[in-house]
Length: 252
Image: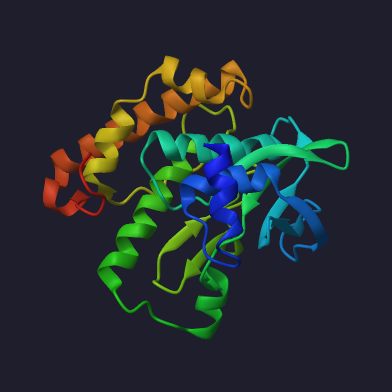
């Protein structure tokens, strides 16, 4: 597999690397240069990486304050791992590797970047497909409640040229609160996503996240999941399924 990956790289300078090969690139590519990422307060960097003639950028974060509340590069990796468990494709690839002697998260710099959500709001740009946009926003809000993320500022919501929403920078997620700390912003939910989060189990989460999260953080995910499921079941009973649930994610 590694030989095939290197052969692939040697023939496609500046081609977009498929998601299945991005992790290997992030782990193995050399660091050509770094500069301040320009967003946030965690001292994060934008790095240019190169491997076998292919160049691409990554977002490097080394912050590691366990908390409470947490503020750690590990949470980026955990959020990506949970996204993969749930079949989400709106979190850029993240790996752990060492940077200047410190463990760090390396996040794939978004291809086809258009603008951030705060830029969209400042420029008063309307999404071309309101239904698709709203479905993605509701999905983001449910995911943030699931991971206990109080820090979804609009600079961490990226929009690509196809008007897909991408979620980045989860260093402050995975608080240990077992229910949302504030009134949850949970108006609607994708029906398939609710089905997927219902199937999450403690063994699954520990297998994917033990290197990055504590037992208490993992237990809190399941507790928040239960809260979310109950919330939407009650809302649907009171208002009707059609007002609460919608279909956006494909069945799997």
